[in-house]
Image: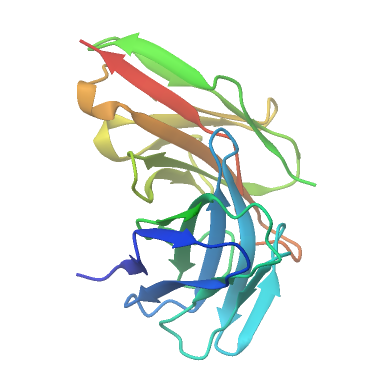
Amino acid sequence: DGGITQSPKYLFRKEGQNVTLSCEQNLNHDAMYWYRQDPGQGLRLIYYSQIVNDFQKGDIAEGYSVSREKKESFPLTVTSAQKNPTAFYLCASSIFKTGNQPQHFGDGTRLSIL
Amino acid sequence: AQSVTQLDSQVPVFEEAPVELRCNYSSSVSVYLFWYVQYPNQGLQLLLKYLSGSTLVKGINGFEAEFNKSQTSFHLRKPSVHISDTAEYFCAVSDIYGGSQGNLIFGKGTKLSVKP
């Protein structure tokens, strides 16, 4: 079955450490997205990518970085500059980055501070 | 900038009762509208979408929503809920035109709790 796989499901970060969240899709979608979800806050866009080797900042990009070297992969690095990284992180994809294309979501990675 | 307001953060309801989850968006420009459902510790699943045409949209699991342009609303309804509908529901909007098209703006979510 086609879908989006996020790993790991749970991740713990030590102070001053960078951690990388994996997102892989086999839907052959061009566009991919990373969201942060905090309780009672909805989803906020961190980064998005419309095509390989291109990505754009979303609303809360500070303290995060991404890469898009392959169509199917869009890893997110939470850097030590992100002072409040504890959250649920969701990766999504869509056929194209147009408003009428629904986004498909992975099952998320929950990041906590040790 | 576009914003989405979900008027109720929590909605408790008894099984087999009807439910309405309310959603209003800020901009009167042309938009696409979506409702997603999230079960605990999972990602979001698309319930339904409004792109154009009939203002009454039917989705999965017996849900439907009505687009009201004059009131900038997109309320979600189900005539008879089940225990399995207990989840968090998110309304989202995307501008049709402009540089932000394709970016989804989400409401803060409504937790539906169905009691036996």
